[in-house]
Length: 402
Image (cartoon, rainbow, N blue to C red; front, side, top):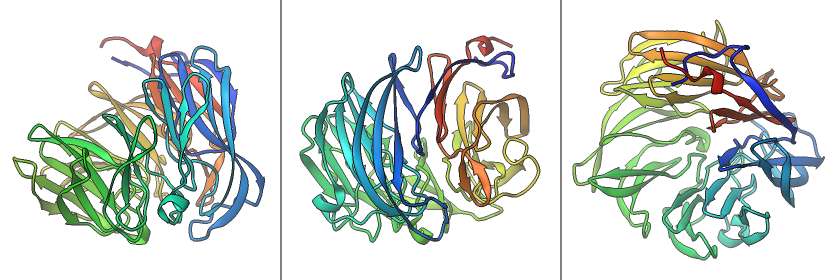
């Protein structure tokens, strides 16, 4: 168990320069995979209501987890026009000896993890006639059995499963004006795997083996912004987004039907923005679009408490982002200021156990500097990035018992 976080207990292992990007790092064994964007033309002003055209190279980087040395780089040219055009959004997915990445403009790659050699690649706009979402492709691919499942877009192809080894299409499913930004999520009901797909019109439960539809519930999102991943607790699914009220769905005992249990709003549930909440012991913990860390009852949506202590400090900030990761009965909170906070969260309140500044925020949003990239936890360490570097800090000395 991690028992404390402080400047004395966290040691920097290495720092390695990289370029722009929103994608979080992925760690497996002694390797770290991350993607970035090296801009060559165009300007980046990060205006939420406007697209900006940029060109350069997106890159997939493989680093040695021990010392941060770059082992290989796969680079490919890109030109895209999106809002917040500062690089790839999705974290790499890893399966056996392969790594799977997805670029801002819908360029999935399957690479050899050992060397970066391309095994297969696709282009959503050419292969499926899919338009790039306003804020770019942001839904992380999901590995299921021998397939990789991606949010694509286009007629009958909101979600597509590809063969892991060859990239051949296995199945396509669903139609929507936009694919949204929420990742396909795997759940199990009545012992059966169910693929949860939330696009800007509805939440859907699919058979991940063939894409057939088991159930669907209308859950429209404003501006195509279905963002956070659906959360599962038993036969309950929690969903919230921009313009989508906090909603609890109940799935039937046989997993073949679903119905709405409750819907909330600013005073019921958590109106989420960029980061997915966490469910623990019947309580939903997450950050709302005003930057408040909120605890809400899973069963009826009642808000139990809220605080700015782990996020902005004292006041509202639009779309303030903080990523929550549970460690036994405690929580790591990595906020957009680049601070790692360790806290106890319960239905009774928030207790901070310590914090340490990990990285300087280097990106821009709403007139402030931010880091909008999810960290990785592996090997008793935190791996995090901004737009200039990726860092490993050891949490080994924080590992203890109360």
